[in-house]
Length: 202
Image (cartoon, rainbow, N blue to C red):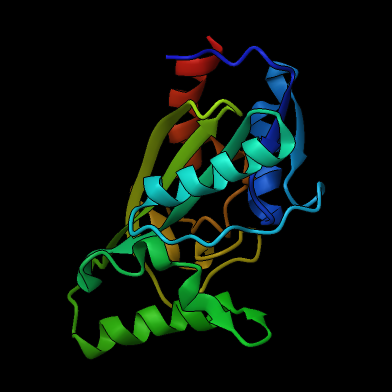
């Protein structure tokens, strides 16, 4: 597995919440983080049907354009009662002509579960796939996951995406109610990052 020796890393994302979490996770390693948005890069089309496939598209695109290693995150929520949907299409479920509307997307998931009379607890999981790619085309993939249940109504205003409907197993607070430091330590992204650090930093 290739080690990261460079001191600068491009985060291949325009999502402010993701960039903030990734920056905090990388801070202890003295790596300068710059986002694809800051560099003025557009977002490549995510044409794959897996988290890993889309993570690779984003990381390789940013690495080639910047000349630096690039880290991408493709993540989403999989809901047991919907055969794993929205999954890799999580952000698409929130798309509107005027931008992403996650409260609408969360309601859409709940309404589908209600229509199917899905029994409680309504299991779900957040999935995160990280890809670190180098300008020469090499990459490494790391996958993380946290399981919980889908709850309604939405609770909390501290998270982003589907956080207000995600109650992790063994917890009483949703990800959007939880202290951000606690969430950061137990999230799907933290799980994937621990594997990334073990593989590429340690």
